[in-house]
Image (cartoon, rainbow, N blue to C red; front, side, top):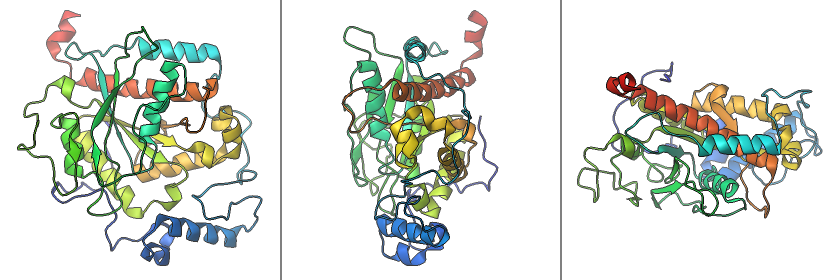
Length: 357
């Protein structure tokens, strides 16, 4: 079970929201930008500060856009991959078979339930749609892709194969994004209620109406199959520099509570094509990119986890056709998630099941 080394978080759930308190300081100490109240202002200030260090338009994108690099990577490119991946049709087929043939190691459940948690705009819904696209054999948009942080319904998506094929044993759960204010976004209390299995399917979240035992459909005694078996944090690589400092504390407090429940956690680094032009043109360059490697380190520091738990992914957005390399990266992420979901089943399998095997 993963444990954080930081100070033990307070156990007061009521009123806790995934947001930045009005007194918190923004990343990189740019208080004036934070007072403007907008993430775009903070990003503009960050890009202006970069220009003082290295004011070359061929290297740094100085326009009013999320932090991206538009020229040669400032740290260069590695000669070999820092993770060994085969970018072939054969590898895609192998990974699809691995995911499709997956069966939970516990006899009590038939599916692995994975909860995606991340700030608004991190790419949770797009990831679900992208994974479904791989198994559909065509780009499709099944999950709701949006930016609302004030209202969102809990939705679970069974990842299905092409017509006539049996569904995979994987369920991806999408919920309201982590907000950027005290009265917006998913609260710690509600997030833990989902993981414990108390929240019914289709429940509409509202920051001022926490999940209670009186909530319609509330599951008082959830079984193992109703609980969450793995949590995947989702962060946007192009916005890490713009996330408020308080978000790191939020992530790490949440991770500690989730670890106390015995649930393993991984992370997905999305929008990698927006920070690395070479990877945008060719996904196979992802593990040769120093800037993505560096950004994974920043994501790990923010989340309080080793980069060995983090997988970079590129979601389908404007594409009309599937790409083998993009599919391999997405399937590798799913395979990674399922490994940790199965650790949960191994940890929670009654002793008598082991004796019967």
